[in-house]
Image (cartoon, rainbow over all chains, first blue to last red; front, side):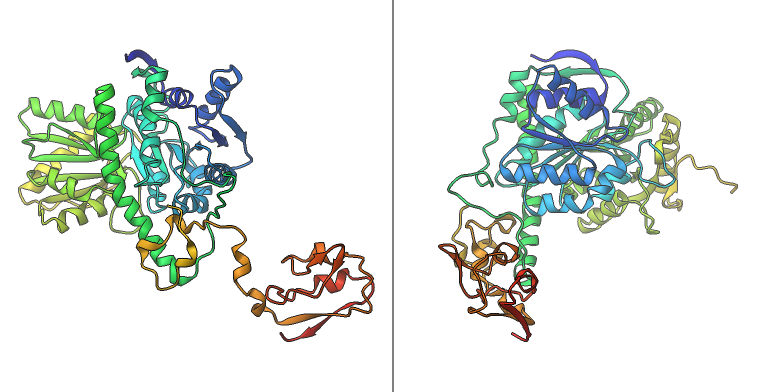
Length: 394
Length: 100
């Protein structure tokens, strides 16, 4: 039975970690994810869980320790934000290429500079090509639900890849909202016990992990890793379905909000999707056919599904909470446009950058974007890569 | 998933490689004759050697075989010619010479 509670996003994830009770959690504090290892440490000190918590000296070490313990055969996880994720960079790729199902709960925060502790997706997006599955949450409920689903996805034989479970720093991690939490035994049953087939501490069955590979092997190994990422789509869908059947909520790759007859769709990830839905409700009341496509799974990128979901609308706003500094828009914008083109869906697209370093994204901001989409659909040329709410003289 | 990796070679298709290139065996480095990387070579003088065994533990590649408390000549299949053993020997029983 679900139980109603009120929690911040960090509390919700820490609560889920207690329920899953992973074997090993190395972690290093960094705002805004610090509370997660802090709360887990409290649970351990109170005897409510028996995870081996390793207080390491850096994020480089926390991911290294997670890789080592996962390879040894222990279910391992860590938490971080922003520069902490950047400091793990090398190990992120090692975890994925060694096919280790580590779980990382990322509380999204901007990367320096300017140095700033607030939310945007530049940390997660920076790690988008490290071979990790990435799942983004709109609110504390989804952060909780996604964390529970991460292990069955990562540990599935068809996948064996690490999973990053992302929530927006402060907006989700620190705001207290209502939430439905599940019974400990139901969560444990859903996640299951971890029995890896091959692991280092396996007497009589020696294994070497992460050997040097000459050019004659490396390209094939990378291709196999890419195939596992593609195969994870099927597993993500199965786990989402199983979660829906058991707990009655959730989405597969994205949520479609009032899109069935929509002319104008905003494609967005994370907490700002809630703001966009509010704007859609107001616009619908005024007779504008608006909708929201909230992307949940960014890696693997569900390109065909997105193209199919958008093909009936006249114009889409692609919202990046991240700057790519490439003169061609943010990562979501580039990838969604490529997906549409390859699927021969030739609707108008307008890319936006919003909410950098914690800048507010309001219902009015969202409504302004939708009014530009109406113009775009009429054939008016709209400037691409506009910064929402930016102060300029022009 | 446990695969006999001796069946895998540089012509193997990607489907035959192990996940993450895991190796399901131990001590496989012996199979690779890395001694050919060497540019200088230790020469062992049996007569000068007092069997003090200061050399064997400092060899980074374990190329000084010890049996029943006595060292034997070098394992040249794996010696990289680093010369640490020469410096460790108090009796001048090891000298490095240029070349393989």
